[in-house]
Length: 160
Image 1 (cartoon, rainbow, N blue to C red):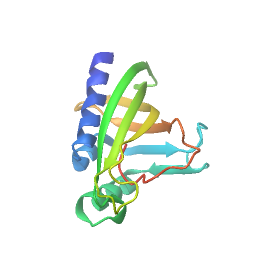
Image 2: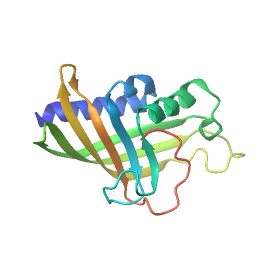
Image 3: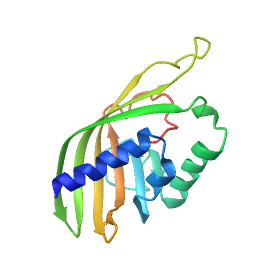
Image 4: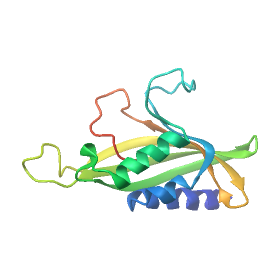
């Protein structure tokens, strides 16, 4: 089962790397959450977060990235995900999975645009809650725990 879960997570990462954001939305349950917290405390809605998106917020984020001129994403970020240390256990009717991820992000640019053209690594533990449905795994929650989450973050307007 862990191999199937790993393949699901690899496919999710490829969708993000290929900027297939609308297909990425379809991986979530309707009440699913996409969270990039500032702390490891498990108090959704009661702690500061970089991102805490329910379905409507995820759809709005994708709509801006795909259909609008979004200044923080001009030019758009290019990403490449490396995923390792996939471990999980089944409990309460879903798989609780932890991965180690290195996400490289870069926005192409020229020497007039400070910070563009630099490859930036983002190191994170990414935790998933993945229930199984008739269509396969679904994302109930994706939580990105960046290693340096309390430090200064550059442009975070792309999807991890």
